[in-house]
Each structure stands twice: as C-alpha cells, then as structure tokens.
Image (spheres, rainbow, N blue to C red):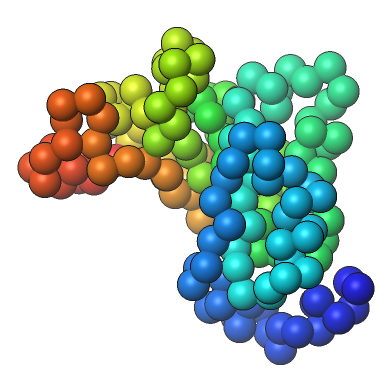
Length: 171
C-alpha cells in the first residue's frame, strides 16, 4: 500500500500543491493514526490533521512524545494540531514535530469546549491576539515547516469584520 500511495505523487511539489484543496479537519477522538491512514486510502489529495494535542501532553507524556505523535509515512501531507498558549512550550513542540517529519503545524484557537477554555487555549485565545502572535512568531522562528492557526470567525460577541481584520493584523 505504501508504494501505491507514495507513487501517486510525481514530486514533492505536486504533493504540496494538491494538499490544501481538501483537508480532513482535526477532530478529537477521531483523527487518530488509524483514521488518517484510512482517509489516505480514500484520497491522496487531502491534507490530514491530527486531533488537537496539548503542548503539555507532548512535553510531559508518560509514554513519551514519539508514541503520542506517531504517524504512518503514507499520511503525508500531515499537520500536527497543537493546543496551548505558551510560546516557549509551543516552540519546543514545533521542533519535535519538525524532527518527527510533520509537514506543517497548526495552533488551535477555534475549539469552544468549556474544558479547553478553562485551560486558556482554544477559542478563548481569540480575545488575546498578542499572545497568539507571540506563539506563531516564536514557532516560525524555530522551524522551517509552515505554522498556521485554526480559528473561528469570532468568539462571544467579537464577531465583526473589524474584529477579524484586527485579529489577523496582530497575529
């Protein structure tokens, strides 16, 4: 199977060009290594995202981050989605992800879950664009792979065009 999937791309450039036409969104308890492998069997034209993994889980996993972040090489292009709000910790996670072979990094600032918001990450970070900007800048400074954010159009009553425009400028 690996030979068939990998040989479907003529070049790395072709793989990257096709990758973002369709994305399999990060979904908690769904987009694990087995699901992503299955999705890759269905299409070679999708970018696959991991489920969101918190920065502390990566840095302090009792089983080690290699087990937590494992993926099958046929999954490429594959994006690691990270939750967190600490530039230093996210930068360490970014280096780990790049060393493991992830194609891109994505910071989740869109999850509205109350549990996530209690941890001061996810959608509540929409109210703190400076923090998000610091996290993105720190990660981009340390790795060569793309770093981006997943967000919502707004959070709570902050959902105007002006809010979104200012948020983008700051991040």
